[in-house]
Length: 359
Ligand SMILES: Nc1ncnc2c1ncn2[C@@H]1O[C@H](COP(=O)(O)OP(=O)(O)O)[C@@H](O)[C@H]1O
Ligand SMILES: [Mg+2]
Image (cartoon, rainbow, N blue to C red; front, top):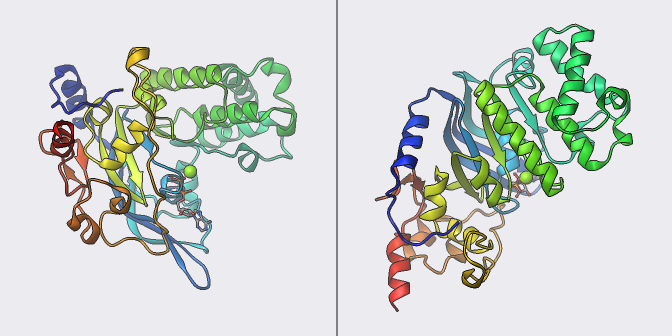
């Protein structure tokens, strides 16, 4: 994962991206905005997020804690309690229908059916008073119309698939009888159970140990190949994104700062924020003696009760220009980058870095 200043010249990647952009859109998020209000303040958590996810595409979403990753997907599925939350605008078209205005019964048919989801914090997502088997079977019966016997058989297969040992016996146990990592795998089994067109995973494997995490990622890739499932994979692990995603989207202060084909963005970042994230990682692909020293991003994200008027990263960005502080940059095709590689930046990062390297 290196990112010297170098234009994209790898035809294979250009081809792969062309491939994805020619597929039909599955999910179109348009100008989504979400706020949380209490008696004396409003937190602007998500501030006009727009993107298109195509059939079979895997989108990795990264960004520091508090950047609006979770809130924006929860809002799409209408899982934000309102109040204190409120939709400040936007549309979320799934196969052309706006999830934000569907009736509750219509939304329930989609949620857990053609959209599977796995969130962090499994304890809050599993029902403690119902066996895990019942919880895996429920969506199969509800969305796929399976009978109890078929659903039970499928639930055991799903538990096997996420490497839960001794599934035939443990299916009748309750959530508290499983470890945290096992409960998370149960959630993943539920998320994948109906072979969704879209899987949304929010830090789904963060709590799992490395081998189980690798197993789950392999499983998701298999399902992608098998059923052409699209995936939104939210993580703070850029290594996981490099391994699983076609497209990466970098979020900060409730906005998309950069987005594009994952190899292109990681090799040739155009937002100083993306560069900061990449520089805070060990470069495991470099020979041991040549690994860069890690640098944390200085400073803290803005207080979203008072969103900054310009580029939200400007106060932490040593490359910021005066304009960055006052005027918000649009998310646009980055000049000279791969098609579909977009960035929101007034400065030209490749030239700034080249000038820095010379001085
Ligand atoms: N229930 C809530 N009440 C008030 N603010 C919230 C609530 N949930 C999230 N937020 C705020 O929304 C912003 C985005 O949070 P979140 O989407 O969870 O970040 P991420 O998932 O990127 O770490 C943060 O500033 C967070 O404090
Ligand atoms: Mg989150």
